[in-house]
Length: 233
Image (tube, rainbow, N blue to C red; front, side, top):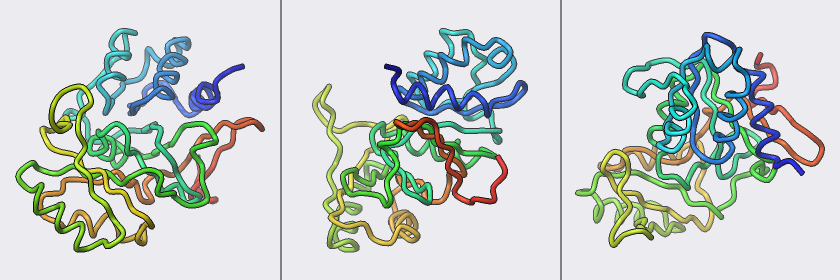
């Protein structure tokens, strides 16, 4: 039986046109998208790609895609990415990879930000089974931890530690990551700003009202969800 992530990734091909600049995120669904693109020479030979992910970049280069660094791009036609979960308003949490600052930059550059994944990612409202992750400069760690506890009584901030080496996980930008575990989420419409108002915090893993479209695959097939029902794909 075909993996539902593969089904969703294949459906994403319909959105890609020759001549476009395409952003591709991280994870197994994005790897499937790259592999399906490679099978369609009319598309992959005539697009430029940008990615937030080291692994995706390696896969793109190994398969002969044109890959530009993020620093050379200011606009994308489409950015595709997966997520841990997203709600009916397409608010998404992208907490696992720790590269959400680059992912959010690419999502903001894109004319269309499209979430791609299997149906298990789609929930009525975001659950606290995943943390909100923040990237912060190392010098701010004690201050940021205390400020989060002061501002959010239902939050437990935890410094992300590496399971491959002794010490903390270091981001692509040389910063630290804190997983904020909420017992109940504060209002999402203000959460990003409240966190980013804390000096030292660079970005959060909550993608609030950024995606326009989601492609999900479930037992009943592929479903295309628009944040705004009137949005033209």
